[in-house]
Amino acid sequence: MRSFLIGIIIMLSITLIGTGSVLAAKSKNEDEIMGVVYGEKIFALDSKDQLDVKLKINKLETENDILDVDLTLSYGGNEFDLETSGKVYPSGNTYTGGYLVDLNETENYSILSFKVEEEAKEALLLPINYDLTNKTVVKIAILDKNTNNLIYFEDTLSSSQQVNDIKEISQELTLDNFDDQNELNEQQEKIDHMESWFMPFLKPVGEKNVTEEDAGKVVSFAGEANNLPPLIPEGFFQTEGDHLSTYREEGGYYITTTTWPVGSENLLSDAIQWEWIMSVPNDFSPGDSAHLADTSLKLTHHGQFLYMAEERRLDRVNDIAYYRIKNPTVSGGIMDGDSEIISKVEKTANFEDFDISIDVEGLIGLVDLAKKFYIPQMLSVVNFQKETEVSPIITYQDSISGQMAVWDDVIRYYSYPLEDKFFKKPGDLIYLGYRVQLPTDADYERIPGKRNLEYNYQFDIYGRNAFGFYTKKIEEVEKYFKKGYEVLE
Image 1 (cartoon, rainbow, N blue to C red):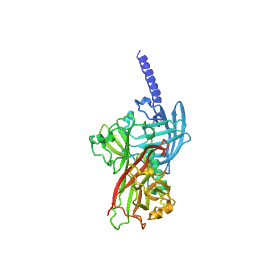
Image 2 (image 1 turned 90 degrees about the vertical axis):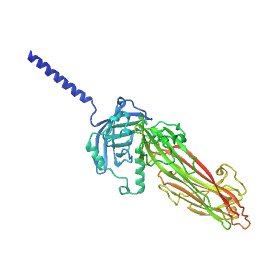
Image 3 (image 1 turned 180 degrees about the horizontal axis):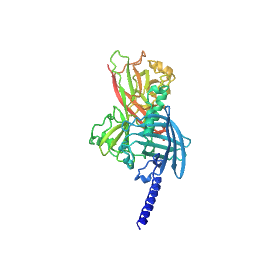
Image 4 (image 1 turned 180 degrees about the vertical axis):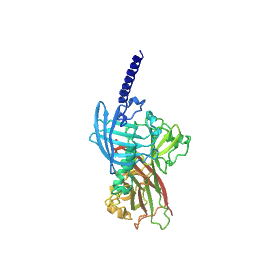
């Protein structure tokens, strides 16, 4: 009897051990990470049961300064091999840190972002993955080029050796590591796209449901929120939606705020702010013949901000926003008839790839001298002609008769457009100066009185598409101001 009981116990032990082996075989292997097929838009996940796609990491190996990657993607009942390689760069996200791998596209897949974060922050994890907080996490976004489906992975990277290898070959974004400035700029653009890869896949948020005045009354954040664009009220960083402001004379801004990660209570804001700068000519005293007026449009603030609702804390997480200013144009001229003319213009700009030999084309604004313009906006009635001389400084005739002989009208307006050019960094600007001239004609009668100048600003706000190209027009901006000077007796 005793030997019979011992036999049963041994058989049960063998059975349990065998069952344990089967269960272990069904669990996720260390070299596999789990993800989700989002489709064309990102949606909230309720549980890890919705993680329906698997990525097996067959190889993460470094050779010189290159990371070689071999992956097997499993979803929809099929498996796909992805073999690619790329260089590693430090993340520009000041909140999470980490490392970004700029991987080459494969035939059927574009790897939008491959990021390794040590001590992952809960605020930027999917809510279903809060258990990964403070662990080493890999975040991978892949676009299926055949279906336009977005596939996203967020899981632990268990091999400390792989992490160390990735860190060891990381290259700083400095000129020392690139052949020239253009190559460095192109790589920085790629990194910016990899940091904000998700923006084109978020659902539209619509306009903010609070006014700027009410947003300014919101209780401040816990702690100190640094480097915020000063024109944007703090409440807008805590309210989902977008808002364009252009009414201030000192400048304007655009901000969009959306839930991120989707399904959390945290909010991510992308914001840009600009200023329009205007100077009027000095009043014309007896003996004065000309004075300078000028105007410029300048991008002053640009960044990405994360509001953590539970802590009521706002952090600047990136110095680069998702948005760009495109086609910046500044214009200006003399609104009152029978008075002054423009006898000289000066044009310049400051932005990446600016070429002073070609990026200074302008439009001459011809106006009938006898007309008086009591209209909201002078720009609409000006006869523009393309400038024949491409130069940053152009001098015209300083007399009415001289300009009439060349143009059949007088120059009283000027427009300086930068077509298909982008402003993307604080300090980028476009400048137009012009000389307001009392005509030198012998029969010109000096007419004392007040005059008005118009200052006009036009540009578009663009965002990226899924492939990183700035093809999405978000907003069209046009603003004009009127300022005066006087011709004294």
